[in-house]
Amino acid sequence: MKKLENIYLIGLMGVGKTTIGKQLAKALQRPFYDSDKVIEDCMGVDIPTIFSYEGEEGFRVREQAAIEQLSAIPGIVMATGGGAVIKPENREVLKSNGFVVYLHCSIDKILYRTRHDTQRPLLRTDNPRQRLQDLLAQRDPLYMECADFKIDSGALPGKTVVKTILQQYQAALERHESIAS
Image 1 (tube, rainbow, N blue to C red):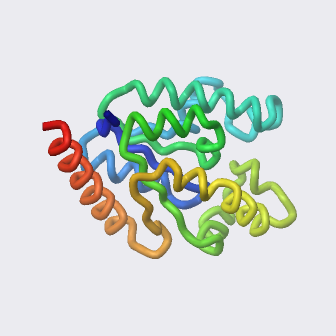
Image 2 (cartoon, rainbow, N blue to C red):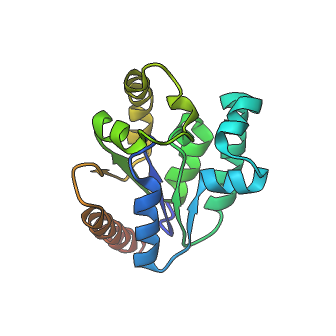
């Protein structure tokens, strides 16, 4: 039976996974982890540096190890990197070990939120809008495959997003308990 101890946030870069994740963790009085931050802390360099030396594939190997390590910790809230769902192993770990929330918002909102961010290697392109559209087309089915719940984090205030996720999580826990008994 699926475990629901953890909450995992998935979605494209800039949808608010870290911001919402910190608020969720605070509301639940749980530890918060950002898988990208864990990788940076472990490596001692930022994500763009890892990309420049190891490429995206090298980064994805490190990301998979971080997700496996973090998902083994009970009772956490974790924000994943936007591309975490690319690897089938990550999707399986997330789906089987927690309540998965797909945060999404419009490309315009993501562009606005990331306009001054220099730490997004996949947006270092002449046409960031097209890049985001391509990433969304590729990843949306993978996000949907994992998600227990999907919410538009760009159309609602952060507090409302958190409150709605908490309601959905509580309902999932109640369903889980009634099935188990």
